[in-house]
Length: 519
Picture 1 (cartoon, helix red, strand yellow):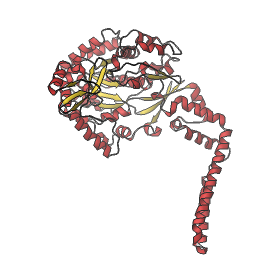
Picture 2 (cartoon, one colour):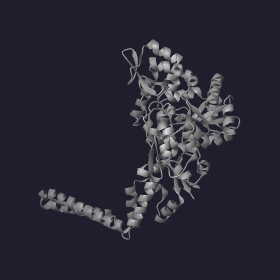
Picture 3 (spheres, helix red, strand yellow):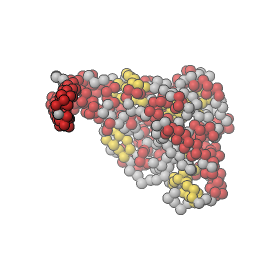
Picture 4 (cartoon, helix red, strand yellow):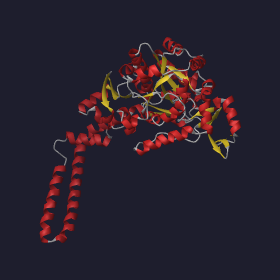
């Protein structure tokens, strides 16, 4: 494999907020503590202190969560190191997509692992542990229930509700039976485990344990107990809502779009297969779409006795993560970076250190056959990020035997009509409207001629344009980035060492788009 890199600005797919963060625009920079550079870790490793008691709780929880999982020596060592005050975590979070979902999940995890390896070389006196936070409490089944393999979309049909991590994955067997090839990793994951959370932990551990990845599930009573004060504040005083709304307004005033929207109460009530929003109406706390309700005294008592029944939403989850982990950096995609930028004031209010925000690595995989076609067609990789119609139009114009661009002729025609107008003014000014109308008709005719020329040239280049359309669809299915659609099995079924090879190419501190040529 070889790797080419493109600047984010060149490819035109990222938001202004994300790009401005990467380039540390002074205004955007004010919503963070430290820039996304290696040098920033010199500051944070010296200043970050993490409660030893919380480390002990974390170790106990991980021991329990890993009790039935076979783990590597690297992961075992990393878990043990969490007791050391010089050990910090680098974290990313993601939903429990079936079969890992889109391939960017793989790049995201590799970004965290590689970041820890780079930092260990830079700061040998410290330990850096890569952590994957499972979004097991999420209840949006639609977002995780499908994946794409070789152009076909597979969907998990189930009527289960509530936190996805607690769902029974056994019915995924129907998908396994449809796959073009047997994949033992996922057969063991979904057949040998009773919950989707356990299944995801299994396959992620199998894929990344040799690199020392540590997986944590926030759906745990011992961990939830540590954020009782935050959840109590959210129920009673709504500081999170007020602070995030203020920051969102500041960003909006500068033309940046908010990624997340806080609520007065940013908690769900969770029990069994139930996860529903908590709202307060007339002094009573109600669980939406149910008959459940609590007085203030009752809900606070419930919070104190069973904190696991309360689940943070997207606003509070990052705060929860930073409270229970000795974390110094979060790695995420453009939308994640954007919504974390809305949260710093909330972190400051609760006196929780705000992590360094690092963008994950991005990649496009081009196989040898397609790459050879691109070379033959003389299409640079950067052009692939253009819409397919523009790509085809440019190809036709660049490869036509004769020039079919009529812009110079159009300019001459406009100048000609302007000359006629000037002459007519001296003779009969009432002709000006007529001349203008004739000019519009002539230019329209010129436009139609241009279209005919392009169409004729397209017919001559039919085979090449067909190839371009096919290449574009394979690399950008539905005009969407490959990494956001295609599952990693598209590549690893034919190349078993795919994950290892991609890992060797991704630099977590090089903020450019990776074009990986699979040769």
